[in-house]
Each structure stands twice: as C-alpha cells, then as structure tokens.
Image 1 (tube, chains in turn blue, red):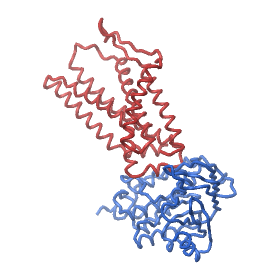
Image 2 (cartoon, one colour; image 1 turned 180 degrees about the vertical axis):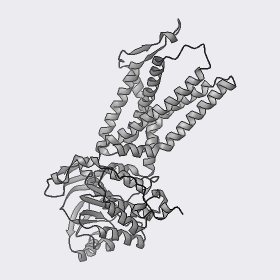
Image 3 (cartoon, one colour; image 1 turned 90 degrees about the vertical axis):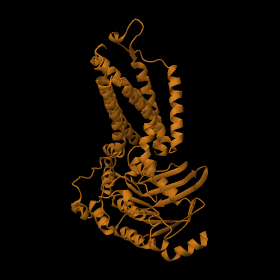
Image 4 (cartoon, chains in turn blue, red; image 1 turned 30 degrees about the vertical axis):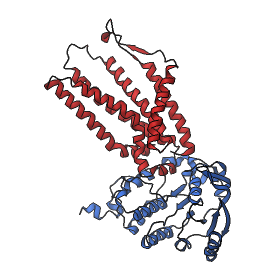
Length: 256
Length: 225
C-alpha cells in the first residue's frame, strides 16, 4: 500500500499544498460589523413554482442561539435556509443578516451552509475541495484534521469514491471547519444509519460556540444540541419553545 | 477569482485535452496525406475548423455540465463572491480554449500550405488578422452559449435557446452598422476576388456577446447561477 495513502488521515501526510488565502474576506471585517440582531427577517414571502411556500414570515436570531426548525417535509424548511443563505431569491419582505441587507455576497462570506444535497464536485479529492473552499472562507485547519481522523476519512480519495453517508459526513465536516459566524445546516442526519448519525452528532458536539440554524427530522439525536425550537407551518413560524421536553408533544399536537 | 479559474480549469482539463487530441490527430493525418499521399490533407484541417465553430455553439453548456451533474451549482451559489465572477472565470477558460484550438489549427494549416510554393507568402499581417478573427468569432459564440447556459439548467432548452438567440443576434446585427474597420490584403486579391476581413463586424459581434454577458451577470446575481 502506498505509504502516503496509508497515513493519509494524518495531516502531516498530505501533500505540501498551501491552503488559499481568502482574500475575498477582505470585503468585510467581522469587527466592523454593527448589528443588534444577527438575523432579522420581516414579512418574507417566497413562492416556489408559483406556489407560496413562505408567507409573511417573521424571524429573529440572536448571536449564540442554536435554533432548530421543526416541520414535516414540504413545509419550506430547506427553502427558508436557502433564502437565508442567499442561494434562493425571494419575492417580498426584508432580510438583514449581520446588519447587511440580503442578498449580498458579503453575507455569504460569514455563512456556512451545509446542504442536504450532494453538492460538491464528485471528481475532486477531498483535499482539492478543501483547497477550493479555503480560497473563499477561512478554514480551521486543525478542526478539519480532527474531524477527518474522527471519521477515518482519507482526504486523498475522490469525493465520488465515498458512500452516500460518508459524503454527508464530509459535507458536514467541511462546513463546520469553516470559520463562519452563522451555520445553516439542512437535514444533516437524513439517509444515515445510526452509526453515522452518532458521528454527525459528535461533530456538532465538537463545535464550541457559534450560531446555528438547523433542520432535521431526527428529533431525538439533535434535541440536546439546540437551545431554541421553532415550528414552521403554513409558511410561518407560529410557535416556539426553549423547553426540550415539550418539543415532541408540541410537534405531535401541531402536525399530527 | 483565482480559485474559480483553478476550479474551472480542473473541471475541464480532460475535455480540453480530448479536443486538443482530436484537432492534433486530424492535423497530423492531414499533413501526412498532403506530404506522402499527394492528397489535399488541408480538408481535414478545414474539418477541425468547422468542428471548433460547432463546438463554440455548445461550449458554454459543456462547461456547466460537470456542475449540473453533481448539483454543484447550489454550492457555487453559496460562495461569497459576486456571481458575475463565476461566469467570468468560465469565460476566461473558454478564451484559453479558443487560443489553444486555433493555434493548433493555424499551425497545421500553415504546414499544409508549405507544400504549395505558388501561394503568396504568409505575412505576419495576414496571419494575425485571420488568427485573431477566428478566435474572436468563435469566442463570441462561446460567450453567448455560456450566458444562456447560466440562465437555465435544462440542457435541451439551453441548446435550443442558444441557437435561437444566435440566429436572432445575427439577424439583428445586420441592421446595426459595423465600425468601418476592414483589413484589405492586396497580395491575396485578384481582379475577380477582393481579399479582406471585416474586423468591424467581428468587433460588433463581440460587443453583442458582452451585452449578453452583462445581462446574464445581472440575472445570476439575483437568481443564482
């Protein structure tokens, strides 16, 4: 076996390629940001294929909150995250993230969006993807190395060589390694077996501080991670709680 | 920007290499036929010229192909850059491709011409004019194709729209006067044939592709690539 491959999970065995210097971050300095509320959404209206998905939605997130959005499939959780991440346009309303009006590439510089979809380049090696990402965001290199050894993932292998579950783990690991102000995580546990689910939860647990907005159907696993739970129905956030013990009961009552 | 170009080059290197191999193979066979079989091998070089023209119609769509396959367009939209830069990096790779392909074609064309000593000498003026005209003409088509491809993910719709718009643009350009910039070659002309290149028309085409690029840049900034 190639010794470089054998030791690949060890950071020192990687090719001596420098990571990018995210010059694009120069567009804004975090210390220059002035805002009272990190995320402020007012009367957001968004249609998808002519059908309204988000209707007059109001929402606010303070720094350090870990918000868990709960709703069944097709209620607009992913759409809401995509609108916040500046991936999808919206028709009406106002979004302010870090005091900057959306849409703006300056907002994207401070957000790490982890998609449910397999959205990375299949032909790229993991280290290539990391290199590419590091051209735009600052990467916590030691954290990523730690994640890889935790997940036992060889960064010299191509993304397409991994199983679907492993690819989800890689996306989560990459997304969490970005030094972002806000992490938007869409269904990180979907289509994973319980072993891989435990690994993702462990990765999330490794994150010290930070602001998170997360969606998932696997309530049990992610309940301890979040500290605020909001329920999305009819295109609006109509209820929220900070009491973990009540989350399942409310969910049953509202969506049953 | 550097990283976008790096990514686009990495994604399309095999595609570029395959095209280079095809053009080179046609050129080498053409030279062999001309020099050793007394057959007009230049036909094969002309064939690769037609190939590059045809390629430029669909080159933009081809550059999005890899990103469509892996849903990477969504990932591209998360990048903290103005989205016109994503288009620009692809346009730069297309320019590189155009230079590469036309350089090869011109090289084989020239080698073939050397077998015909009765032809007038190929002066730098003739060479540069035809070389640049060829590059700019196909680059115009490539940029229009790229601009259209950034608007829709549907491959057949892209091709259909590209061809439709290309025809519309060509017709519309007939009604817009070209800048008076014609290059005349007396050494290639005769009593019956006036050899000249209408660089004004080519520049007009290039400007139209730039307009398309700007429109699609505004579109992707708002809607995403």
